[in-house]
Picture 1 (cartoon, helix red, strand yellow):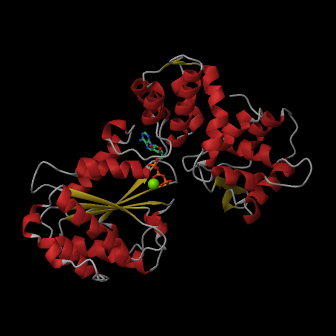
Picture 2 (tube, rainbow, N blue to C red):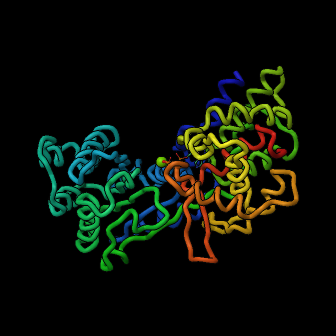
Length: 394
Ligand SMILES: Nc1ncnc2c1ncn2[C@@H]1O[C@H](COP(=O)(O)OP(=O)(O)OP(=O)(O)O)[C@@H](O)[C@H]1O
Ligand SMILES: [Mg+2]
């Protein structure tokens, strides 16, 4: 059934695990695979929420594993939560090793080497104990720790993890650690001390390019047996603003709208009809953030209009824009030529207050201030809301 194929072709809320389904990211994967193949080299993969970090991590786990080779590399993926300590993260990892031993066969399974050495009830809190346990594994291992930003920055767990990476590097332990987390700067994720920095490759994950997003639509529609009007793939890519969650969402809903009309061909009007449902089902807390940012009891306020102008503004590579950058988009949104600077300046200041999120973050110095969205996934969402509320055309 086409409707079921559509659900499996587009996965707005599920990370990708199969290499074939991952769009772009090839150079990034080569770089990390090279790191993994280099003794004493570890990786920190970081980027904004929703850019596709977990998908890269999962595909990496598949690609770095040499499942057919009894002595080949094995990979383990675990995810952190806010209750995790250094000990609980390694406990999860070792439990996964035990599971993988049975399923995939770490070479030493027959002798039950690891089980004999690690008692799951035992608390392990010392980096050197981890080194001994991991160093004793019969296969080289890649350990991928996702959601690493849930760990308190600069806390015990983060400090001990950095010590562990240093220890693994110094002792050439055949185990590569890949930390994955949200963060604009590496300082937010790792207690960096100079000596460990050269053993860690800091790999940023950027939003996807339009051609890569368009490819998600081309592949997904092809897999579902659905065709589309020329240019729809790039229109969806443009609406997604670098964030693949929106590409999957719009592709899925546009396909469903076409099937409801009894056809396998998506047109522009199907895409338009897909927008309300995409807004309704957008993940990542964006709807709550939007409501909080624009909520006001003041009559004639411009919160929605100014936020939309911010989402439409030209931005630098780090998503930052200046006061001047929002002037023209705001003229467009308000359909008027004269727009007082003071009116939007005040709204920008309020957007940086906790009462409105803060939805924006202000950086830079006087006369050269810059703003960016605290959650960049809000950019495509705010633009889609603007289209849906008829504030701008698609
Ligand atoms: N390269 C890609 N090709 C196709 N789809 C992708 C790609 N990267 C991510 N996606 C899709 O985008 C969505 C978000 O991806 P993912 O969960 O990997 O992001 P994330 O950065 O880990 O998000 P979070 O910060 O919320 O943990 C998922 O639906 C996933 O299927
Ligand atoms: Mg993730």
